[in-house]
Image (cartoon, rainbow over all chains, first blue to last red; front, side, top):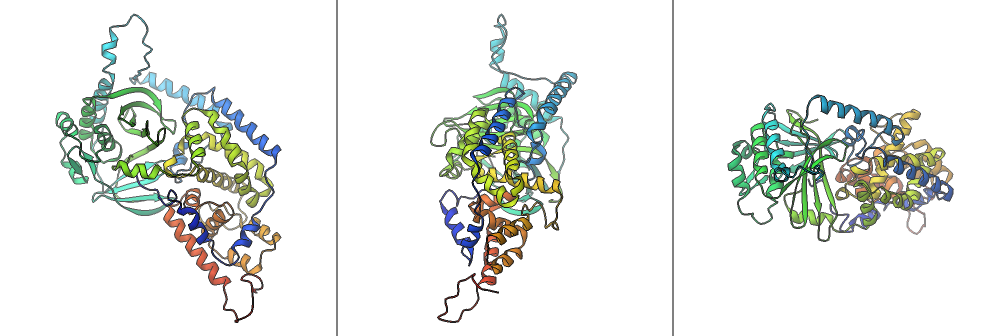
Amino acid sequence: MTTYDNSEANGMGMNERGALLDFPGADELATAGLVEPLSERALARVLAEVEAAVATEGTVATGGARGAEGAAGAKAGVAAVVPLRRISGRRRALIALLTTAAVATGVVTYANTGATPAGTGTHSGARANTAAVFLDDISTVAASQSASSGKYWKMRTTVGDEYISQSMDEYVVNSGKAAKKGQHPDWQFGPKDLDWKGLEQLTTDPAQLLALLQTPPRPKSISPFDQAASLLTESPAGPKLRAGLFKAMAGLKGVKLVGQVKDSTGRGGTAVEFAEATSVGRVIVDPKTSAILEYTFTWTAGPSKGKVTYHTVLSAGFTDKIG
Amino acid sequence: MKPNDPEELGNRRRGGEHGDSDAQLTQSARGDSAAFTPLVKAHSSALYGYFARRMPTAAEDLLAETWLQAFAARRTFDPARGSARGWLFGVAHNVLAQYLRRAGRKEPAPGPDVTDPWQLVDQRLDAAALAPALRRALAELPPEERELLLLISWEQLTPAEAAVVVGIPAGTARSRLHRARGRLRDRLTMPRPAGRNLTATGDLA
C-alpha cells in the first residue's frame, strides 16, 4: 500500500509548516497557545498509572484489545479502543468463550512449539512437514467457500476501507469520504503481471501455479511466497484459485509453520512464514475460513532491521458500490 | 501489503527524526512492554499542552486516559504510516472526542469528531488579548480547517502528522490548511496607506 507521503522523510514537513503559518497574526496565535508545563507530580501520577497497566497486562493473555477491531478501521492508523481499565475481566471471559468454541467445533489447531513430549521421536519427520500439511488442509477450507462476484473488491483494513475496481482503479474511504488513489498495481505472479481479468484467467491447478511461482525472478520481484500471499490477502481471487494457491505455497521450499498466534488486533489464527536474506514475510490465516487476517513484513537485516509493516484485513469481499 | 517494489519500501523507511519513539512504540507492541514507559516521559508535556489548551479543567485526567488507550492500542501503530508523535496525538484527539461526546456538546456539532471546543479555545485567545480581528477570523474558519491550523500552530505538528491526527489523507489536510491560510490573509490583510506603519493585526476593527 502506498498511502503515505514521503515529504516528511525528505525534511519538507517543517518548511511546509512555516509556509502554512505565514499569515498576519500567526505569531500571536502561537503565543496564545502557551500553557503552564506539566508538573512533576502530575507526570509521576501518569507514569504510575501506565506502569500499573503495563504490569497488569503481563498477567493476562497477550494480544491487542479486541475493541480495536471495530474502532481501528474508523480512523487512519489511529485506534480508539476500550479503556484499558475495563478490559481484563471482559477479555478473560472472551478467551474462555473462544477456547470452548474451538473445542466444541473440533477446530484443528496447529502448533510448532517444539514441545512434543519425549518418546515420540517418530514425529520428527512428520513435524518437518507441518507447514505443507497445514497449507493442504487450509486449501480444502478455501475450496469450500462460496464463490461470489461484484464490481469492486472491498477490504476493510485497520487504516480504512480500500476498493479495487474491475479496471484496477483503487479507492480509499476514510471518515466517510471516498478518494481515488489511482491504479492498483498489477499483482506479480512469476513471469506475469496480473490485473483483475488476468486473475480470472489464471490457472487454478496447484502444480501449474507452483511452476509459475518457481520461474526465475525478474528484477524487483518479490519472493514467490509474497506473490502468493498478496493474491490470497488482497485480491479478488475466487475459492478455486485460493485453494490452488495454498497448495502451491505448500510446495515452496522454506515455508515454515509458526503455529497459533494473534494478529495485531488480537484475533487468533495460524501463521506461516517465509524468510528471505534480509526480511521475513508472514501470513496469519483464519483456519475456519482460510481468510488472511494479517500479513506482516519484517526487515531482519540491513538499515531498516527490526521494522515491521502490517497489513491487517478486518474483512474482505465483493461489493457493487463504494461507501 | 508489501509494495511490489522493494525500493519504494526502502525509501519510505529512511529518514525519521522521531526514530527513537517509533522504535520504542514498535518494540512495546511486539511484547516488550517496558519499552513503553520512556514514551510517556518523552511525550507527556506536549500531550498535556494539547489538553490544557482545549479542556484545561480535565487536562491531567485526559492525559492519563490517553496513555492507557495508547498502551492498549500500541499494536495498531505502524511506523511506515507516520511518526509515533502524530499517532499519539491521534489517540489524544480520540480521547478528547470521547470526552466531549460524554460531556454533551454545548456548541452545534460541526461535523464528524472535530475536537475543537471553540468556546474554550476562544476564551483562551481572549485571555491572551489576541487582536479581535484575528479572533473573529479564526472563529469564522470552518471547524475542520481551524482544528488543523491549531494542530500545526500550537502542537507544532507537520501537516502530514495533523492529517493522521484527524484521520484524513495528508493531501486533504494540506489543501484545507492552504485554504485556511488564504482566508486568514484575506481577512487580516488590508490595503495600507503608504508610509503608515500599521501592524498587521494591531488595530483592524
